[in-house]
Image (cartoon, rainbow, N blue to C red; front, side, top):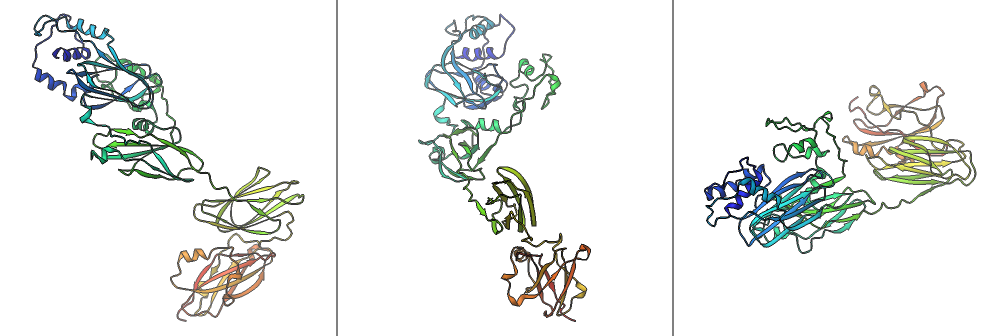
Length: 568
């Protein structure tokens, strides 16, 4: 066994002397040194019972060693590929035998023994090629030096190795239940609910665990290591190992650095300059999300896109060791958006339309007779709404509409028009729309650019208020209404009153002040004033002005709150 340890050291630390013999040494001290973690930090020795992470360059093999000290020892070796498939092989090396039974006779020179070990291929125990988390396990293994060879032929990649001679007691990886599948229990247009059976590591072994859910549109993942590789830095260089740990002069050449054999400390930058010969390969941005949810075994994923296929993976993570095990992932396609009912517009008739917040409505206008022009009148009652008009699939118009707008488009025989209305983010939209091929007088009244009502503070009295508003060059009928409100009349109430599509027909007769016709060819003089009388002292009133068009459709100006004087 003494010889086994020293052979391992010869493999890792070349010696120049060809005549040096095996030294005598304190076995207890040697055992302490070989178990010192610092020993493994800068070597190719796999420590017993600890997971190591490392890096492979494409088509550049890497070799690791693991010592089994006694015969009939359990052995477990686990290799976890991260972002590329691996080829790996585990072999048992034949070591040079001690020629003296007591270990005190003359031995072969160290360099000769070392060369003998390297030249021996050893007995292959297990091999694998792929990107699964794969392991070799044996309940009874012979003592010796085990050799693990790894190769990545696809690209530079990360991987993890875990080896132990006490697999039963270690249990660093969380256990999966007898049914390790992830089930989809509910499916909607933007949500998917997942459920899985709890890990025995938590329920039976009482070890702290947490579940992490991963969502993406590409494929299922076989390890959390692969997920983290996708979520990591934009290019592979940022994930490369630190210098002095796994680098050789050849490794530095891969990244555009000259081999440095001077023994001086290398200056190492996060991103080497392309002038040094390093090609930066940017990784594409991946639409992937990782959510750790504690020890719950049911989770609803939200904010998904309708009619889209997603892949779902669940990983159980041992919080103490930070090692994880993958459940059997699943995939699902979210439901399609409910097909919208198309609203048919009739020539010359006004249609009321309601659009949900961020929603959309589809309208269709198919004139019966041939036509040269088609006119659309749109009255947005609340906030702005987006309108798109297509004629036989061709986009003719795309605009935001606020208040009243009129659009006149060139016609075409037997043409059909598709109108798409899209609501905004603030709230629901209400509007009136009219389509016609024979516009005579406007169905909706024309409006000035400014639809505010101006109140004159100096003309206020205890029983009256004087207001003014703008008109247009078109002769229209204006009606003014008043309503007493509380002094604490707030913005929410005021907002409800701002619906421009609500006409005077819903108002009480007692609220009507007067109606009058008004217009002016000179827009500078298109202003009218009115004094509302019969008000109570110290009271607040909501004033509304409605303009009524030739077709009987009305539009309300912005409401105004005035307060009479309390003392006169």
